[in-house]
Amino acid sequence: MTLHDFASPTDAERIASAKASEGVFTKLMADEFLQSAGRDGPLHNKVLSVKDLFDIKGQTTRAGSPILANVKPASKDATAVELLRTAGARVIGRTTMTELAYSGLGLNPHDGTPENPLFSRCIPGGSTSGGAVSVATGLADIALGSDTGGSLRIPAAFCGLVGFKPTQASVSMSGAVPLSESLDSVGPMARDVTTCAISWQVMAKRPVATIAKQRPKLIIPQNFGLTDLDPAITAGFAELRETLKTKGWELRDVTLPVLEDYGTLPVWQFSAYESLRRFGDKLGEHGAHMDPRVRQRMERGREISETVFATTLSQRAELIASFRAEIDDAIVLLPTVAIQPPHFDDVATDDGFSKLNLLALRNTSLANVMDGCSISIPYGRGEALMGAMLTSFGGQDETIFGAALAMESDLGNG
Image (cartoon, rainbow, N blue to C red; front, side, top):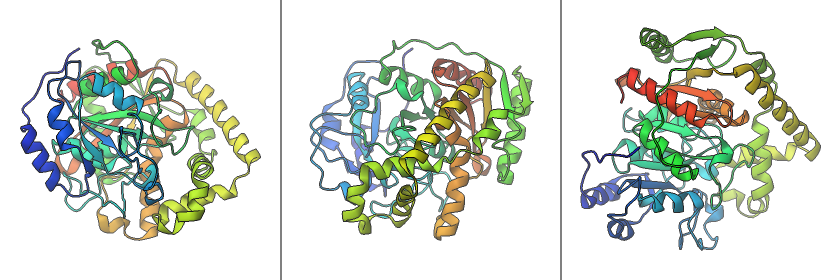
């Protein structure tokens, strides 16, 4: 599998546009970017933006937070960055993100939040907010990001992109600031499935090879992910189903018992407990300088004892096993996000933010908790744009890509 260069701005034009962009980059790497042209590899000359969560040699990794502003510069690139560079990708800069990657909406009061390039005065989604906007506006071909509860797939759905959350163990988190060691995954965003597939193969140290299109059975759980949808999402998902049926896909409505049990799992505990365990000392020293919404969610970790969290981990392990058994050879199809991109005004209040953040994360978090793999593909146009999400259990990454390639083609995206 190889990538073909598409029409794109010159390097100088790209740098000029990046400098003029608001809230997209925390640091531009113009000199290094210009000097790195011509690298061979499966990602030859592809422009890469890097979420400010990943180490780049000689730079401070802030993870969008003032509490990490004084950490030592990195001694080497994060593993994912190193692998993508070796494959020929060229880093243009570090992108903005939600502080410590702790929300699905992408807001950051310290570094700024870029506007959604497709929906005027709307948020881009997060936590990989700057990464999504960098690709959607043509400043980058690939965005390297993380996904703890949807942080690649939510902004992909909001910005008309493809976002892939791989099986957690397939891509190293080495050199990346963790939020939840249980749920964090490293993956790419791009404008097409093929670019995401190659990027994942590179980061997972797999042979870069063609993945065959396939149309596996799709199941649509009737007991999860289909309530409280925006009207445009409801209409778009119904249209998506009919389109896929006409292309020969088998779709079945099902009720999955595991999703009833999943509803009893306190998913919020993973990020709260594990982030507090890692950043608790800095929270005590510098918490007043943090985004209050991030700090408050992290402080909820104080409510959780080690014994209680051990029970949560055990319950999760049982759910993972049940999910694998109940899915079998099918793939779950759902809207990526229940809502369309909210306006900035909609998330200005704490109540508005909390409600929309939960809705944004609801469908995508399933794959993280179930240790699965999941991809969001854009569907629709204009105000009707939404994300179509395919999810399976862990280790099914190539199956997910095969289905995504077929769906992308059938939807007229590829």
